[in-house]
Amino acid sequence: MKIFLDTANIEHIREAASLGVVDGVTTNPTLISREEGEFEDIVRQICEIVDGPVSAEVVSLDCAGMVEEAKKLVQIHENVVIKIPMTREGVKALKELSELGIRTNCTLIFSSNQALLAAKAGATFVSPFIGRLDDAGQTGMDVVREIMDMYENYAFETEVIVASARHPQHVVESALAGADIITLPFSVFDKLFKHPFTDRGIDSFLADWEKVKNR
Ligand code: E4P
Image (cartoon, rainbow, N blue to C red; front, side, top):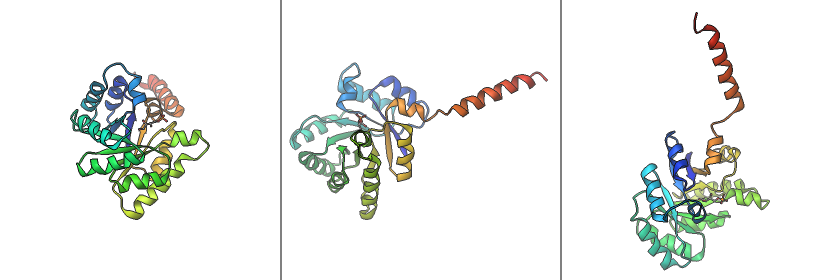
């Protein structure tokens, strides 16, 4: 399973990318609003750090506006993937952009039927928001499992990015569901490395090594 970072914070992206296990980045207008600087500059910087898909979201609500924005955003860098919201107009835009050879990530997916439509329209990626579903009392991961089954039944090439991840168990469940990708806030990514027994084990090995190192 690929791991993307769900942030526009350059320091976090640089730090995580230096570990060699980051395959891409997703941003959205909220994540961009938390950082200093101009949207296109931030996206460019991210693309220069991570050699993989970097999602940048359109804000138009009509198909023509989305396509126009997409054409500009892809000029920033070859890594840019266009995030399109799951609406009727969005589905039309997905189709047009796929015919133009522009890669897309259909965002704000909350049901498997929405994911089916996005795949039929030629989306490169779909992003089911599992944490927000969990927050609303529905099991988000059930939707991911349904999408994986549907896509397998019909051999869709659209890849599933598990989005709105909140904790490490979401990573385990995504991998067990066979999701292609999970996108993680830096805080969740950081937690994947940690286990108290690992820290305790290192402390005791080093303490024991002190006893033998001068023999
Ligand atoms: C996905 O690409 C989105 O940026 C993201 O995962 C949204 O998650 P949130 O529910 O934490 O805002």
